[in-house]
Image (cartoon, rainbow, N blue to C red):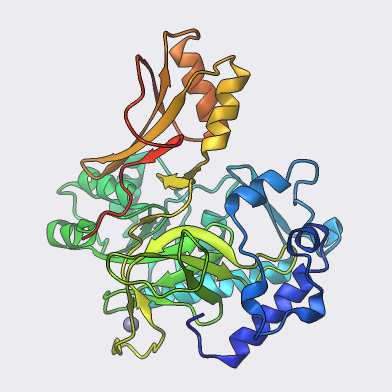
Length: 398
Ligand SMILES: [Zn+2]
């Protein structure tokens, strides 16, 4: 663990002990709550997203709820599906952390912010929206899509900031074109950003871009500051780095990236302990940034460790694809290829053999399951490679 901070460690132990009282964690860990201490921390098993998903078959919360359902204030439904319950206190803590992150990225009371993340089902937009309110910003709750309308509103209302996924931001700025506007800052999050994007956007459009790294089940994990030279790790989370093959604590270096593992203190309704983010970094920057925040920084996420990846902000779960194809009577070999073409992430499902089902029906079923549109193709044989997921963006370096 990177934090040499007794308070963070004791909070981690506290939340793990709470987790140990739930049916799921008790069964998975086989640990007495009392046996969990800062010294025995690494005996607590890592939690994968796959496990979160697979455990939630009979009970939507997978046997991890520590409160009565009546005590919940919010339940979000993320693809997987993963249901994410929050009490009002949980939400307040999460919102406070998000506000700090967005404030560090440069948003404040004078800003009018167009919020373009999805408001339905998932947590991102709700959390960003509440955090912007906490900061005193005026919010335009635009949501995704309808680019022309966004451009119109930005130009007419005097929007100064935007929160967006990187690909949407560029699309939006292109659409704004030569129209006069006051847009000066943007915060991007939600997908693997392309290394040159920030500079390109700043050079071409005069908009300062700050990056924000979050993990779906935890929220903000690291974020940039005014200097924009790496994302500061949050000091009120337990953030660990592990070897993605062995799960052992390790230090990321160029050529041997480590996976980020997070323990959240904010979510007490359903504790998230030692969650494998699947995201890899190959550098931690300890030099003083000069902005006043002394927390170490990470530069960018260099790839995905496990067999779940993110495309345009949505998780791609290979087992879900296999299951969906199965329900349509397709049991031949298949794979999903994720690649980046001209800065945009593309996803295609390849199925070996002659078409047995209408491609459009397959595509619609997959879209329903994954909430992302994917191309589908029947091919004579699959491209070389292992496993269902072929993420060609992996381990790319600057
Ligand atoms: Zn800084």
